Image 1 (cartoon, helix red, strand yellow):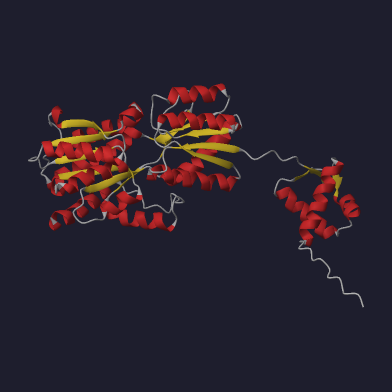
Image 2: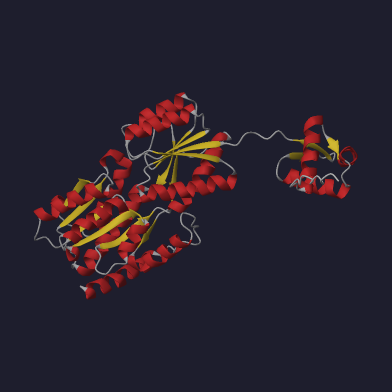
Length: 404
């Protein structure tokens, strides 16, 4: 007796097969068809045909006219956005990449991410890669203002719209924080600290700058200086010093260590850093010399490491200005889509910022860890009014003074 032949099992989904039959019919006929005709041609029940057609219309694969006829819609290829990230070693840049990936996935945009490695030459090479791959939009996040015209010119010649993050590029749509206002708020925190614990005394106000980033980013330090001067008038101009920390931890550590060693007796030193990475380098130098009582530091970006630092007892970190990095992704994708649709968009687009002081750092960190790089404005710690913010800062600083 011959052996039984085992039937091959096909793992098919019946309703999906029917949906594809309907879609392929509309595609092949390439003309509008009414439900009755589709039912007769496919031999699928009217109810099932109706529900499948409604689903295909909802998802954009099929269109329905006022005459109740259905037609296949030729779907365009997926849009591809190129993002040149500042550096995978910079927490703020990585958080922005995560936010952008999430936003791109939500709207069905393919995102090509390349790392600029905080290196201008690499940024140029990455821009050329995006051009060769013919992405639809290029989003550039690189730190050097001197190569910005080179990158922008090559992208413009290729006819690709450009969005520049934080560092302006010629002919590009800009998105970033209002640097001067963010700096002004940082300076206000530092001045309030000096008034509360040093009786308004200040020996030095140091601005840890990023010279290569250009004047717009340097206005963070300009704003910080002005914020201090507004609350501590009549300070000698020579007590305000700008030092290039490049926005890097090691560089900032070295320059602050050198400064503190040259001024061993000074006990009232305020430091405004252009970003938190630079601030953490300064704090490392302060801690190495045991000068925590003599220095107060405010950063920019509100990254995880800075939030943790603010919670340490006797830390010189008294605040950071959050640039709400979790909101960048959606804004960048919206800007890119608007540009591709030919819509008029503002040349400068500012993101929100807010001060985070030690009393708010724990809550901000909890939210960040629960949903990294996916925070919403509603989920973030509330923006305090100016008087409340001052009271909160003073309260925490009093606790620091008692501990000291």
